[in-house]
Image (cartoon, rainbow, N blue to C red):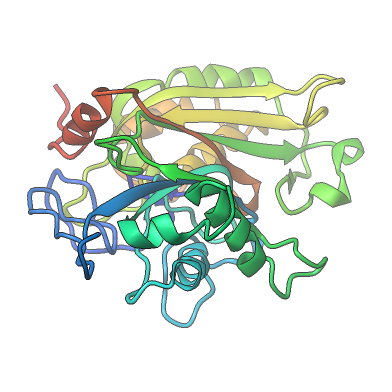
Length: 341
């Protein structure tokens, strides 16, 4: 995040761990249905047997996490949040989250989205005797669990901002229209803020932002981004890059003095954003011409000359979804095989 990955590649993320793949299909995520197979029903005891799909809007500081995806023996965002949800909801089996973009170790998120299916009786029981909604109650209770033991007290590195019953057809991963990331760099000592050292990369050379912008525009559109993705056997690397913009932020704006990239695509494959940033830095430093990143893209394969930029400069800012009936349609399209014309 990433990713997913962490970004998300075909709805996977910058740094998503490898898993079994099907040629031309998205990589599966643990706990999610495999495309083309029936979705298993949620088993709930008693008459209130239906499940409620709950959307979570969350943010996290990725510094002390080994990425989003749950991994044995490692602290991950998914692991911490699923454990908290299981406790708060008093579930008989561990909670299972589906996320919009699985971020890599050290990658942050300000606008991450996830969903889980909750037994309806457990959802309805959340407010107790209070007049709060189930979503408000879940957010409050999660804050207490996630902030436990944090220093300063209560300031956990994962925050769920909102929880609400999702509309029909919602899928955090497959229904997303696009993901937007930012990458932040301080290329001047005057712009180095020690309070921002966890989410801003300190770069030792002044960057030519105009040249980086020229290079970026040559990469927009639908392409096979294999040259900028860590390869996975059988996994597609075709993506639509909607925005790749570099600018030096003027005084008076948030991030003033920093060089910031805005990167937006329908999905991202493994390490794609950070590889694109690495290629842009080579241009900005004057080591490569502006046409070079596009030449790398056209080569069709990963090249050792493309370095992956540090993870901590990357933040998942926003995930967008269609409204109404567009959710189910988008999810169905996202699961389909993607090929270039």
